[in-house]
Image (tube, rainbow, N blue to C red):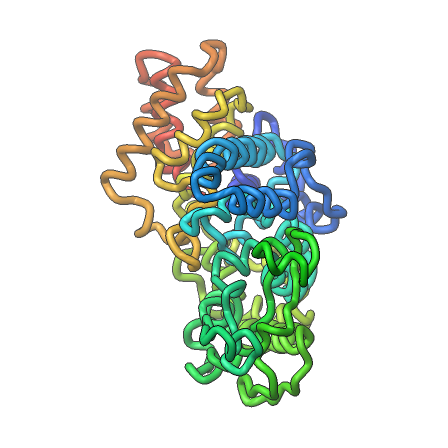
Length: 451
């Protein structure tokens, strides 16, 4: 192990070191990462009292039934409060976590299976979606995460599957309302096979038919409550929405089988060779470089296929790749990563709740607000414009001004970028006219901005 390996482990696999953590990691960087894979899934204490998606969806329905003005009022006050509370708890969990590789993987997979506040009323449920559908599966089987995400009411609403009706279904015939292909298309293009994964428009349409009827119990009208039962916020399969008859997807025929059609199709897609290749490339891009070496991608692809998509085994293979450890600074931190790693560096989480949201918004990456179903980008070119760099420096200066004067910049530097600090950065910190200025220069340095 080289002196930079601890830096790589803490920043590329973690979310930046807390005080004293870099020295502890340095004893066995790969072991420190690997131990986090084997830990039984536990929700961080900061997130344990957050509301479930089911309870939030019921609240949305109740507000909707009381009229549009009441819904707007609830959205302005109640929903914003729910979102703010979730964002603060989530960020504090990331700042405090002794298992930051797990938190990074939650962020990675939640971004892969993006849902976003760009779709109005689902905003308050996104944190719960991340806790319920993503977090339990980060080191389990990919197909289990795919099934959990696709079944989740937040995803079904975000990509409009709750209003998708088979043309030949009872509702489709009666109402003249048809198919919505959003969910089917994004699963194939963004979640599994990838845009070059060998599927056709016909596959998208057939898959959309397979997924008709996948909805949830929070979309009841007053009359349908009598027929369907009480409102609830969980998954629900409605046969009257489902397109009857066999469908053919990726050359395989699926006989009529209700919800199970979708389950079988998702499992087959999860095990498809193109999915292994697509996921491997995405992991390599995140953990190795914007343009990762082909042999590293191939190794991850092989691990995915041979393990049946077991993400714990794929993560272990990732740790073992030489390409991960060859270069300490190949990736630019996203705004979110920069905020969290800076606050971890000084063990600082005492920020007024509304400021948490403001910080991320000003930096250009508000939580749960990815601009499209593709999620946030993962390459330097998308984050390092002159304007974006200026926003980073301004926030880092403002933070440095709020930190305790007792913080020693040399100590903070040694505990964060010490193993990779250039002579130029060391000179700039030493020449700073004040401790506040020295900390601002440290956090704005190339070494701290990269991982």
